[in-house]
Length: 116
Image 1 (tube, helix red, strand yellow):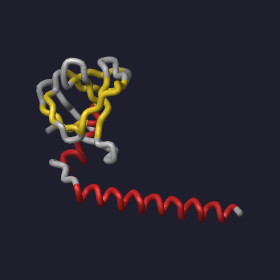
Image 2 (cartoon, rainbow, N blue to C red; image 1 turned 90 degrees about the vertical axis):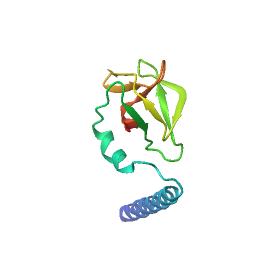
Image 3 (cartoon, rainbow, N blue to C red; image 1 turned 45 degrees about the vertical axis):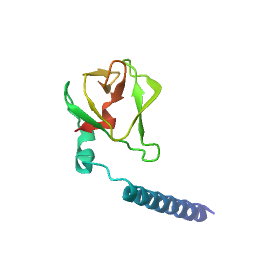
Image 4 (tube, rainbow, N blue to C red; image 1 turned 180 degrees about the vertical axis):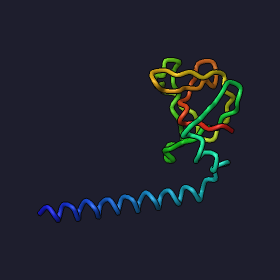
């Protein structure tokens, strides 16, 4: 009985991995993101300063949007589309989360952006 559970878990895990891989490949073929090489390395340590250009990157390719935060790092109902370019107005750290201001009242999480 225990061996059968392991087999089912492994098979279902492989099936899920195969389905995710196939949908990612289809989406990658239909959408060409600019500067993909920069996006792979920059989110690990973004040293973004005021006045620099930033590029919005999305981990979830199905929604292709990024949440917008308030100045207190609280999520709002607003979103920003993947691929948009902004100029940084300010940066700050709230509760261990680094956020970047893109306009008067909208802030983005530093993990969702890279330098343009």
